[in-house]
Image 1: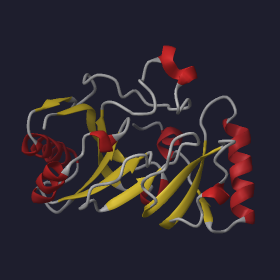
Image 2 (image 1 turned 90 degrees about the vertical axis):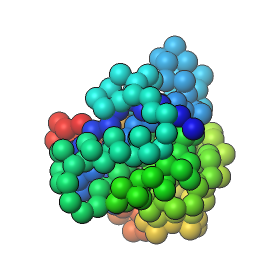
Image 3 (image 1 turned 180 degrees about the vertical axis):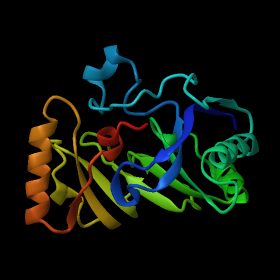
Length: 213
């Protein structure tokens, strides 16, 4: 299988459980809930995405004919930016990364001593072998992946109250205020909800606060 990747770069994870941890981000192209084109946003299943996942023109992006080629590319970027020794923490995101991640890529990354985390909308069942699964449900999309390590719900989605998800089989539950013109209000509301419901923790997009990728 060939893989198309928007960008590959090293930074600190800005959200959720691994906030502050050095990571190499691999942003796969494509999504099953939005085309990525602004003219299609209003009618998309997910209307609030803040990420460009169209094309392969980002830093480190490209088309890779084999899993081994992509895994070597990812490990090389980690080695050059972080450390050529030890394991690499790889965050696979998108778009929707599970449209492309398969067993071959998981095995190739593990062969390169990579710890694999995935950030998914949960509409596709995750393949076996992933080291960390973070699901971010979208209100009008069917949730297929109902277990994992971390559930990160964007606040506020009218059809997706936190109570709808809190009995699912995840280890950690986060509310993340939606970015945009109402970010201040959503942050206050999410904070208040976490205070009243301690099962949930607040996740902020600290990379945006720090001005890093």
